[in-house]
Length: 504
Image 1 (cartoon, helix red, strand yellow):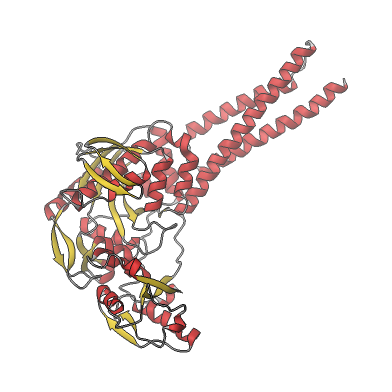
Image 2 (cartoon, one colour; image 1 turned 120 degrees about the vertical axis):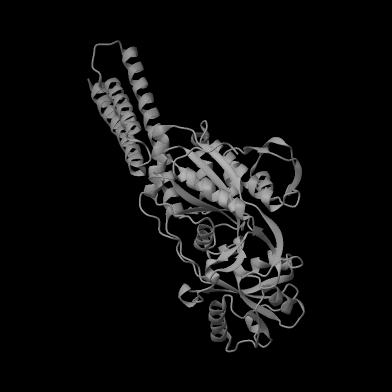
């Protein structure tokens, strides 16, 4: 009798712990709001049945032999432990997914503009006060309000400011420093990336050194043409119907995503959830199009990102005469990590060539290739080894994106790699799609279970040398082939209208 009383207390505790674990998992999944109602009902029914079985085994009365009763109790405890453990694991999955969704869909907080004081790498200066007595170079217009704010901070801290030498071009500014005409340059840090596009200046990272960095409040970065362009606010519920999303590959390997950075990947994903059709449209990074931040002055597409992802969205929306409500941005580090997290991707390359990673050469064969993250990134960035150069690079980028889509939507990849996938996106990925819209999109996919038909199209152009808004001196650009732009417009309209495209 005493043993039975003790067991009933133990059984009550075990059952309450199991019930709490199941309830916690249910709360997490309901809050996540990504599972269709039929799945929630099925899981609820299954949970109720398992709990009923646990209660039956824990509290069943009867005249059984002692060893049979002990066996039933052991079985009940094991079942409750499995149910509770599984529920807590499921709750962890839902909780981490919710955290990732909340992080990636949160409105970007303005972190301020970074302005740097740079000297030659071999300069012995240890502080800004060591160079304020010598001339400094600045850009006449680009980012000038932020630079002036930094100069005011310098004067407040040191009691003096350097004599300024002005120039209109980033290359001329670098020359002032290299030739010894000035001892330092003061410039918005994002504009140094412009030197990556000019032969003879790509080694700037090794030739100059950041002496001091200043963070300028957005309120003091007042230049209309260089301030960060705000991202458009999408209408609520837009993801429930056909939509266009701008996929941006940020040209940075550092942790996190800066507000202003060049975009080396510029792909529009035209998504129709009703027909399960996805059209990927690539626009080469050097496409010569109007820069909204420059009042419509012509510039390279990649440079539009220096004024924020919203500026790139506006430029592409104008090019294709469409509305682009959403964007998704990932940097190169996140791209590598995501592909490694899913176990690599299989990419069908139309050409054989050699590309290079930090680990050495990667031989790409014509046909199917299995790439890890570093190899996939090298494949997507390579252009010099390809006859069609940047045009072919854009096609390769879409091949990698298609491979990622196929990997994530087939088999059990998400279930077996969920932890690594979520870790890979933390701080490396962001979107302006609301958590509600993202939940709607996922629910629709889980509810239908249908596979997606992906079509690729790349606009093309021809090589040219022209001055651009961000680089006033003549530099390499790609003049648009307007026939291909017109074809892209037609394909976009077809997908948005619910038509199914032929395979590319």
